[in-house]
Image (cartoon, rainbow, N blue to C red; front, top):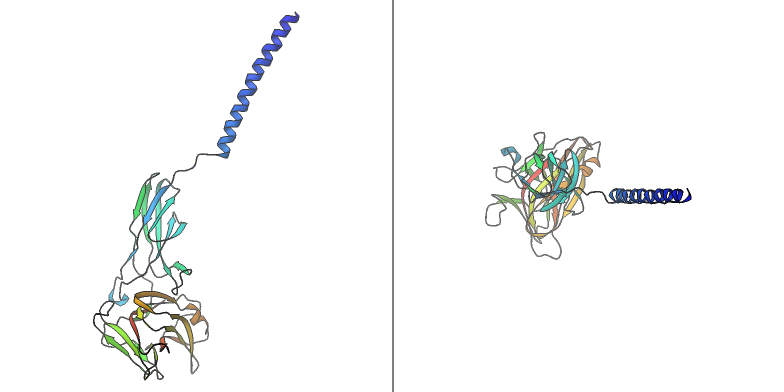
Length: 295
């Protein structure tokens, strides 16, 4: 009887030990899966450039300086990528991809945003893990964009006028220095050190409205752009930015919203460009093209 009980208990302990061991192994494996779950495999998207084209003559030049791609997957922001860009996306199957053109604001590299007047690009892709998909986004001006000023120097008259205190003029030129077609040239020297032009026609926008200026430029002397606000019988100037010299043609996007909002009681506004010859230069030159004010 005693030996029978001993064999029973030995068998029980042995079976119980195996069962316990199996439970421990099973729990350990489950814990590892919880701690180190299978990682999703991404797909990759590439975007080298975003092309832009103005669609009507009233919109002027198709010149652009789109620097960034704001990428959305099914309406959710995936990321903001300086182009050319190659980046992973954790998605599989059919998804809507939206790309918004992004710009550098006021020439400040750390100030970037999706340009509010450029249309987004949409496409639908069937995404498969590990694959790379190359995007070729295209954009135009949004149809609701209003052009409060557009001067490309291709017409017989200017929509910019000389201010009474400007001692030099804006000349229309066509030569090897051109960016595209005709351009505006400002020449400063000891006899003519100050330049000041503003829009011929005033315009009105509500304070708080998003307003930008676009322009192509090349210069060896800095110049400033801003807003003249008509407040009663007075014109009040508010500078937006000062633009630094460059040896090559560049395009800049200038936010005018703060300058406009600085005079909320104004009855109308004008865009202005002004420059004073640097004391370090004997002669100075400022070249301008495709000047636009958009709302």
